[in-house]
Picture 1 (cartoon, rainbow, N blue to C red):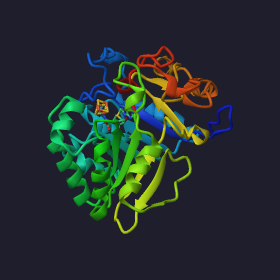
Picture 2 (picture 1 turned 90 degrees about the vertical axis):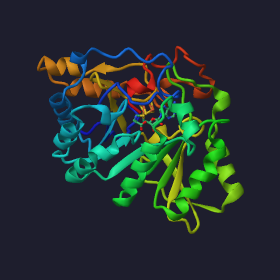
Picture 3 (picture 1 turned 135 degrees about the vertical axis):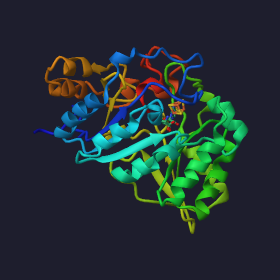
Length: 328
Ligand code: SAM
Ligand code: SF4
């Protein structure tokens, strides 16, 4: 079977599946202020459909699957979905806001899930409420501690916004002194209905400048297809990275495909187009051709947006899906 190549010769072997459109937080950079219109339940992928679609992707060379959302752990049959996918010959990974992690540690262990990214943008409970509109700071932090005690190597996603948490960059780095944790600072990206504002973007270069004011840092090797540029402070146990999606993109080595909770394939986080995979699957039709044609339409960078820094809030160049409905 021919692997999945796009028209720029990029091999695609990594699929990110959104398990749900729902979330127990309301992050302002992700969820529109007035919420989102949820899809009717019968148009969302069932556990069996997720498995069937994933098997087709695996047959086409996909070897890594990340479960995301919305918040993947709010899906009632999350444990069963994870268990069924764990039987495939793939690397499984999870991105979560961490709130429900303690409910699932035994499931993670039983299926051998080791790659867990947790999102936490601030070390202040008050600011946590400001950005997520919920009061769950302590729950998230205690679940991070739980995973660390269990020996997990956690990657922590931190969306950096000027005037909100850029004054905490050093505090996050400080965390890596004694703990084997990997902090990933993410540049703030625009999506439909989010609180995007160019003035609040802190660039990759600015982030590194702030770190260098306090520490001598060294560049680490990045894995192929990595979206993150990794560094460490000499002598610190943990590491950190910057995901410079906006100011220094990594589209040239992109290997990512996306599947939304309602079974639409997207070839890029920023693509406006999407291809319905679920309806044809339900009709018993072959979906391989649809997957290939969706990939063939992939643009070189940023879903075809010429200059992502010039995008305005709710710009028509953006997909009509907010981040929470795309699956980050
Ligand atoms: N609910 C889970 C979580 O928060 O980890 C998974 C889904 S969330 C959409 C996936 C990741 O996307 C999170 O790390 C979140 O911080 C990131 N994200 C969401 N909106 C973003 C934005 N506007 N810019 C940069 N990263 C964003
Ligand atoms: Fe929910 Fe994650 Fe979006 Fe926050 S970033 S609203 S936790 S899906």
